[in-house]
Length: 132
Image (cartoon, rainbow, N blue to C red; front, side):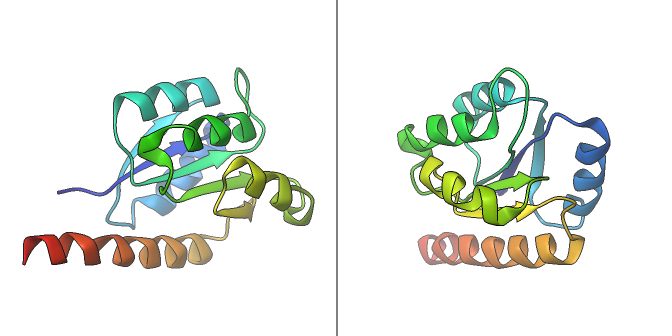
C-alpha cells in the first residue's frame, strides 16, 4: 500500500523545486495548484501527509488547514504549512488552523527529507503491525 502526499503550492517554480525534493521520498506525490484544488483533491482521495502553501489564490493555506481539520479523515493527518513569511509570525496562526508544523521557504531539502523520512517511518509501524 502506498503512502500518499499532497503538495498544495500555487507557484510553478516552487512546486517544481519541491517535487524534485519529494522525488527522493517513498511518498506517492499529488499536486494541487491552489487551496480550493487541494481541498477538492483531499475530499476525493485520502492523503497521509499534506504540505500546504500559506498564501494562495481561491483559498489560502490557513483556510485549507481549517477545512481539512474539520474533516474526519484528516483529524490526525500530518499537515505542514509552508510560508515565505518569518515562521515566528505565522507559526501560531498555523497551529490554530491545524498545522502540525510550519516551515520557512525556501524549504531546506535536507530538513524536509529528514522530516518526511521520520513521518514515513512512523506511518509504516501501524501498517507492519496490522500485517502481522
